[in-house]
Amino acid sequence: MNLETIIIINMSIEISNQPDIKEIQNLYKTHTVKEIIEFFLNKIDKDDTKIQGAVRLNTELALQIAEELDKKLSNSTIDQLIQKQPLFGVPFALKDNILVEGQPLTAQSKILDGYTASYSSDVYKLLEEAGAVLVAQTNMDEFAFGSSTEFSGFGQITKNPHDLERVPGGTSGGSAAMIAAGMLPFAIGTDTGGSIRQPASFTGTIGIRPTYGTISRYGIVASTSSFDQAGPIANSLADNQLVLNILQQTSDKDQTSINKPIAEDKKKIKIGIPQEFFGDGLDPQVKEIFDTVIANNKENFEFVEVNLSMSKYSLAVYYILQTVEAAANLERFDTVRYGNTSDHPNQELFFDGRSLFGEEAKRRIMLGTYTSSAGYYDAYYNKACQVREKIRLDLQEVLEQVDALIMPASPFPAFKIGENASNPMSMYLADIMTVTHPITRVPALVIPGGTVIEREKKLPVGIQLVGAEGEENTLYRIANTISNR
Ligand code: GLN
Image (tube, rainbow, N blue to C red; front, side):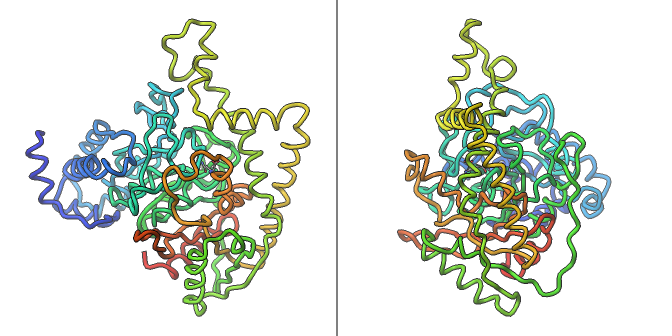
């Protein structure tokens, strides 16, 4: 098809600023899948020039899948097809650390430059089976270390659609920014210590970190195996929940995969406000949004103050365990088995190759190797494991008294590009609101709570809802009452 015909088709397709899954599937009453997928590929090509959320388009694969779906569409109605494939014809994007057979993947590290995935992740297979069409892979901080999407090993910096001078959050910032800009109805991110939830908060989108083990990690580049979980980012709660339900399947390829526990139905929901997350350091404007949301929902829920006294250790425990596991996981990138192997004489291969890691990856390898080395193992790694269990018990006890917790996902709205770039410590501290949940395996959902004005720009602030393991549906129920999205 030449460009002229694509433009003519595009003009006949009308969609809203933030199209959702239903809206797109409705178009299949009058359009082919190929037309709609081409429309979205063009849209991203155009809209993403400023945002820089995508690292590559999967044009060939997307059009090939569209052709297969069009064969089905010529024999059945879209409603019949949705019964069998709930995401029939829905375009989406994947973070660049989730494998798709035959597609390039780098986790935004130069060490993986030139790598093509030889198999597909469970996450991708489930979405493909459900009829979704991969159109783009999204930007991230190298190996999912970071909180801003400023640190791809290739230099691409994703911008926040609400203010192009600010970060979209990280590390799934590419996915979140594309959704916030209305380029797609949903995208997949991964969350080790907040990488779905903090970007959702910064971009005014909806993102969930599910109960650990309920989404298979098979085929996802490992950062911190005992924390990593994938999850959807979307503009509507219904879309987010639909995609989550498709992804939550047990897999025999992931040893930590579990059946999603079935939560009991609750009548009057009681929500705890953990005092530790509303104290010093919280931006007063962010605090005000929470005061308003809580005041407006007094009739709907019972709110009580609770204490998570062990959470003051979360950040320290997180960064000890994170770096130890990351250092171990990064050992496999020896430049022999993966990626960039060219131009090195044999004996130099290892040293030259490992130097392709970015600053942050090197920092984490050094820290993790140190805290798990023979002399320091008991003082740091082992101690952190013990404290992790104490934090889990503390949270579990609180979640026996209340059905959910409400708290920020970040102490402040999106920060400026470059603001935290030279100080890794201040970047780590920004994770204070999101690291307790991976440590304790519980699910956490972030929804838009309101906006604050900074330098004449409206910046979104997210509300984080936290439940006990398997309580995802309770979180959506609360979210549907608080938000009209
Ligand atoms: N900011 C945290 C870190 O740097 C979390 C990142 C993530 O969730 N992938 O480790």
